[in-house]
Image 1 (cartoon, helix red, strand yellow):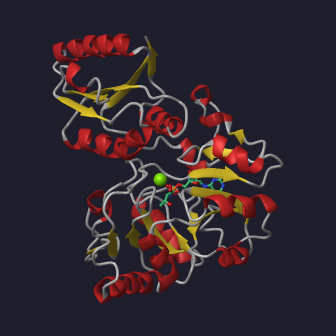
Image 2: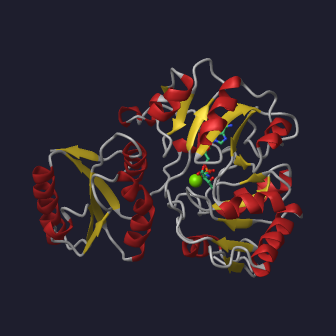
Length: 357
Ligand code: TXA
Ligand code: MG
């Protein structure tokens, strides 16, 4: 995987954040971005792979490092509201209202871009995705980098987004100049994306900020039909949502229904897998984790607290890969609150393979 770069890794914690060593590390990372290099950094959602959003060569480097198709646009990360006007054609009233409530935070807005943003960054689109993250290290890096950092999730294309720096290192070590390690990403799923260029705002990717929360601020909000469970055959409006992301090496099936029926059906599938000599894994919850007979059983947390599943899902998928699972069976999650985002990612990882019992 190494392309010969010597990737510096610097860990920033609440204990060392105020030290000169940490401040210097952030300055170093910012300088790398300013001269056209790439650094990975923590955000509250997942780790980002950052480059200068206003430099076309940086965007090309990002696509190359990730192995990502270059028609898949990048999110531009900013650290101050005042910086938005430079990269968009105009700031709609709706964007102001959303920013007041949700920025800094896990919300990305699609707006008409200004000519300052190169087409390389936006995958040739005339719109730009913008987000102001809340993670303190992310904000400090963006400032040090000059204010505009293009950052997709810091994974190799097709792998789960990294929620820990060690996964960034696994995927991109040797391909980028530096990784700022900020510990575990607290949300664990990518930001909600809302398109404000339509007459009615449209959610293109569900996340921690839910439709209900957005509607409270904006009134009517649509959801791109392609991201709904029944929409698997419609082309999504966010180019990146069409790729089979988050795909574990194992074949993943979701089993939905009442708890007892689900446990029974998964155990039945496990017996069949065992007969075929397959190594199987289960994504369970705290209440059911002891009830499965499989080589690898992992709990996504307390079913009533779906933010736990959000935080753990990508780590669990990566661990199944490392541990050589051939088949994975997952319980389904409630499609309310962030559970909707969990199900959206899980369905994509499963290639929409779901069984109702
Ligand atoms: O939480 C996040 O958003 C993370 C962190 C690092 O901030 N970033 C992230 O970036 O998830 P990425 O590149 O993995 O996903 C960006 C998504 C893709 O699906 C892309 O197609 C969509 O945003 N997107 C970007 N610009 C767009 C635009 N102008 N119109 C529609 N979709 C856009
Ligand atoms: Mg991604």
